[in-house]
Length: 268
Image (cartoon, rainbow, N blue to C red; front, side, top):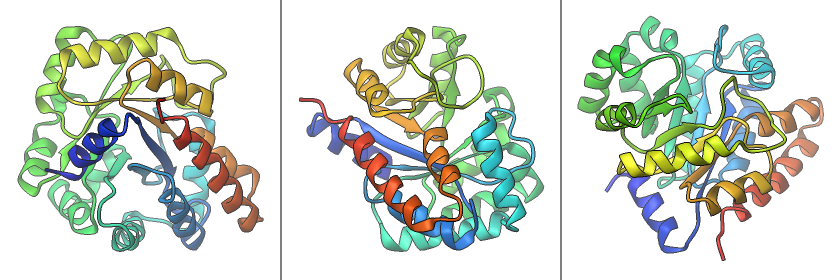
């Protein structure tokens, strides 16, 4: 069984959901980023890692700022893969997924990029701006290499399309919890919970909700409602942003925040 399958199976046996943190690799710089991801490993059930990009159309201001900091620090795909190799060397079991944009894959050569990802220890890849209709080449190469292709479903996605996406997807289904870009929100929309329910009815893959998940109360709510996992990105980047220049405080706050997010996935 693949790492995603093992992870979700183990969590179901413990009546827990998955905590999946997202960060932009290289933010705020190469060395700090390595320490940040190592800190996430202490609480995470899987990792979702972004490559810095100049035009992240699905992302709000928090992740846009993280992308810019990483780009300003000279981070490129090869340096991102170097960070991932170091993480994989420290943990052979955790699923590692990438969440990025197709231009980064295409401009580096689709096959070459995916081979590098697999060799670095990546398990799955989600290309945010690639619908299933445009996924033929990437899906073919990923399947041959042994990478899972993860796809997003939105509140506007029909049951029929969920089934179509599910046929091509692997790892889990990324449930976009709102209409709009990434970013912290005060509340979780009922539409996010309704969509997760529709995904579970129309797909055999686990349903993990992202976009707007910002605090432990949100995580508890979506796991209690039946989602298999919670993806938290902007709220984690907010911790990094407000501690720029004080790495020690940043790591301590990340450690505490992520521990609380993970604890909220445990159902009693």
